[in-house]
Amino acid sequence: MSNYEAGRRLEYRVRDLFRRNGFFVIRAAQSKPIDLVCLRPGQSVLVECKAGSSFLGERRRRELLDLASQAGATVVLARRRSRKVELTNLVDGSVVEPKTLSRL
Image (cartoon, rainbow, N blue to C red; front, top):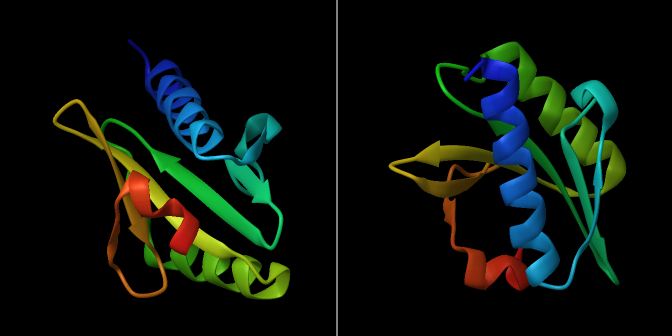
């Protein structure tokens, strides 16, 4: 499976996770400037997905934090770890449990 295919599969999995938790989710074409925009009344979350050997460099991390600040949104990094999706809040590095998405 190519990195593109692995990334797309992760994006769909994370999209479905947020939808199950009451968010309206938009998947950005070509992942620019962000992979997923998740919205529900009073709450917006920007999600960057990284699959396989992909990583989030410091420059890209700062770009995402700036984007989230401008949008008044939370920014989350989604990675696949041991067949599970791991969500990390980029502001403080805390792990976000799917059942706590409403508290972001």
